[in-house]
Amino acid sequence: MIGHLRGRILEKQPPWMLLDVNGVGYEVEASMNTFYKLPEVGAEVSLHTHFVVREDAQLLYGFADQQEKLLFRSLIKVNGVGPKLALSILSGISANDFIRSVHNEDTTALVRVPGVGKKTAERLIVEMKDRLSQLQLPTLTELELSSGSQSETVLVPEADHRAEAESALIALGYKPQQATRAIEQAVQALGEDAVTETLIRHALRTMVG
Image (tube, rainbow, N blue to C red):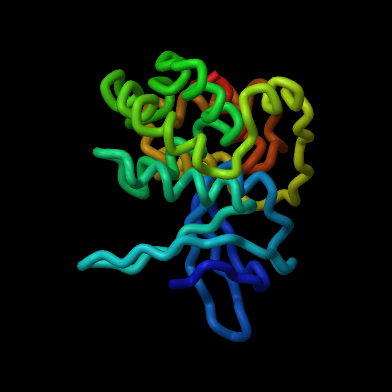
């Protein structure tokens, strides 16, 4: 089991990155919430990881903090939720907002995430409520006190931001037409110079918020 990696970012194109760890390149898939926190290409990063072995593939998922990793591991234990959908959930909603939605039994917030229908949202609330209490995660009171305290991350520009942003949304489960429309709206709001992760952040807020 690979539980943690520290290395230099060789490439990154949401939701994937290539990490050089002592000369070995690891392909790591991450949620957009983790991507927002990544440094520029060439910089060193430390990630919590979860390794998945399937008959047809070996997949490595990376997380910026232990809280998101714990949530991911709990999500994939829910009936009907695999790693791809779990990553989509953690991309479409922050870990704190997900915890708040479960505590408040807010299915409306959850069904806005691609791949999550009403039945899945209800199942998430039922199955995750007990699991969240067993994890070392913030309580609902602590979340309310910390609401709005997150800061924006400044990211280094990369080429072809619009195409990369659309590809990332499609990889997260959005339909191509949805992705194109959302990124077009983001470009109109933020300008042509907006970087990939900023476009994705705005698009996700528009579709999920």
